[in-house]
Length: 541
Image: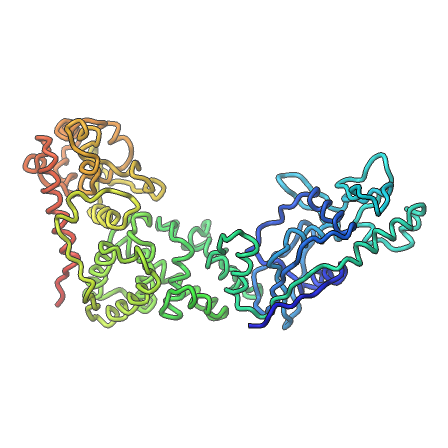
């Protein structure tokens, strides 16, 4: 790796590079947020010869997504075949100086900000300690806009400022003659350049992998912007297929990157994602996007998972996307479907992706390769021994993968409303907290508390049912099931069948009509365990 180069640049040289497209601001920089007051103080410091800090530029032939304009000034494209210097540190300062030089107007919070009005008070001696640069021309003293001072010709200045030419010349020389300190870091890999940016700009807040890949894969000629493509993947606003229509629009950008890397490199490691070539990445995008759609459709149709918030792990999308890309639009065979089912429940119930996600995804891509060949994946040393003890008092948390898996099992049976036997509507926006309108404790927690049960006993996954909205809860309140079930019997003539969609088979025999909570937990747990084992131990021909 080459060592940084220390340089000094004059005002004109620095901004000629911006005007010719050789210096750019990458889009992972924050927006221009400095006020006119801050800009005026910066120019005042330059006039007084104060140090204003160093600009750090990354010189590279990488084509990154960069700012296209500053206010009303369009920035030019980079010269073809030439390296570009991206601003890693000093964006606010360099943009402020450029805004003044170009007389930029931009809109902030609904108000137009005109940088051409920042002015020098000509009544103040240049060597005075007083501040000479102000945000607006003073009403009671002669002044000149900095924009005009830097851009006007001698004739114009002589015409408009004849009595102040000597002082104007001093200010102009101090601005244009100032040596700006610049450090050039040449040809660093993009991940190292972004690490430099992180350390000097964001106080240790690391740029996300997605932000880096957005910058790296941007291609103006091919009209490819990963951030835009990702937003379209989630929600195309009616302009094509998207995950929002499938209610799978909570898939994070990091998972999408892992899907692409799994397809291109059979790896989901950060280091391997960063090595992906831009043109290959862009070529692969439509294929991977189709694979993601197919995997999401399979989760919805085969596993009957209605929304993405119920997925035990977002990472599950990666091996399934890999599988469906390689199926090239063909449906899984019966054997492949059984093996995919086994894998899904094994990964979901075994805390598979609670740690070391990248390395485990690489292993699971190999499992998908075996399933594509209709071979049983190797689970040796990772067998899952599911028991009633693991289920009985499992604390219910909507963010716990094991609990989400059980919720997926409940959702598979397409639960219907206690009151009217209508299909329960499940919504992503409702599933983030334990008190979601879709989650109902069959034996209400407040009732169980009065009966002497501990909170860890009342709030267990086997006591959870999926309901359609808060109306069931309003009807139920703190009443015991023996009481509220009698009411629903009168409202819903199909109540017995309705309850089977909640894996609740026998109101009398399960102790429900006797308000026997422990009997209910044992009976429902046995059914849940049987359903899970049926999926974990498929019959293969």
